[in-house]
Image (tube, rainbow, N blue to C red):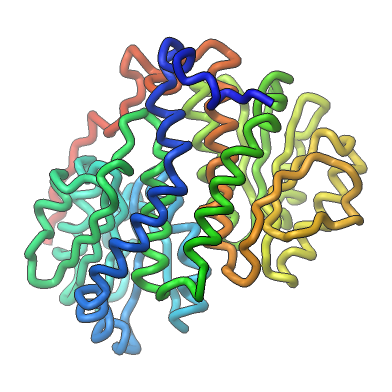
Length: 387
C-alpha cells in the first residue's frame, strides 16, 4: 500500500519534504548515534564515572518542549539503572523558578537537551545552575555544533558536549530525528551500550515501523478525528507527551490532544472520550506495568469500540485478550526496555502528525508561516537573578 512517505515529490510541493525525510532517516541515524557514543566512550566515562560515584549527586535532565519530553522518557529508566533519583525538569521551570528547581545545594549533573542550542532557556538554565549551585557539571546533548549551548560548553572544565549526527538537526519545524537521537545517545552514554545485537535490532524495528505504520496512520488521519489521546506508563508516558505535542504542532492546534498514563486517565481526563476520539496506547514491555496498560485497552475498546483504540506494541505476539483492534507492532526488541521501545516507536506519532497535517491542508515543514510559533523560540526575556 502506498503511504504518505512514498510520494516525496508531492510532499515537497505540499511543504512536507523535510519533515518526511527526517522521519524516514531515523533508523540510519540511530546506528550513527551508537557509533558516536562508542567512539567517545573514554571521554564519556572519564567525565561521568567520578560524578556517579558521588552518593549525593543529583541528576537533572532538562530541555524545553520536545527536549523536555526526552528527559521524561529517560528519567524512570535511568533512575532504575543508576540506582539513584534522576529527575526530568524542563528548562522553562528552571529559568522561571530557579530557587525552587535547585532547592538544595548538592552536587548536580545537569543534562541539557537541545536541537539547536540557541533557545534562550537552554542557555539560561545552565548559567542559573552555576549561579544557584556550588558544584554543577554539564552534559550537553545537542544536534547543532554551532549552537550557543555547544559553544559555551565545549572545552569548559566541568562540561562535556555530546554532539549528535549533523542530520539530526532537523530542518523541519517539528523535532523528529533530534528527539530520538538525543534520547538514544543519552541512554547509551549514561546507561551503557545495548546488549549484543541491540543496535541492529533497534534499527530493524525502526525501519519496520516506518514501513508498516504508514498505512495505519494515513487511514486514521483520513477519518479526521476531533480529538486524539496518547497514553503510556513510565518512560512511555514521556513518549505520549511528545506524541501529543507532535500532533498539536503539525496540525496547528486543529485537533484536541491529550496525553496521560493509563492509570491516571480514568481520574477525570477520560471525560474527553466520545465517538470522534481516537486513543493510542503504548504498551510497556515490563510485565507488571503492561498489565495496567492492557486493562485500560480492554476497558476502552468495550466503551468506544475496538476500531477507535490503537495499540503500539513491542511484544512479538499480539495479546489475544485485546481482540482484533488496530495494532502497530514494534518488532524484535525483547529485553531492551521501554526507552528503546520509545525510540523505535516514535515514528508512529510523527507520521500521525504528518498525515493529519496534510489531511487538513497544513504545511508540516512550516505549519505557522506567519510566525505565531517558531522553530527556535523567540520573544523570551531572561531576567537577572539576584544573589
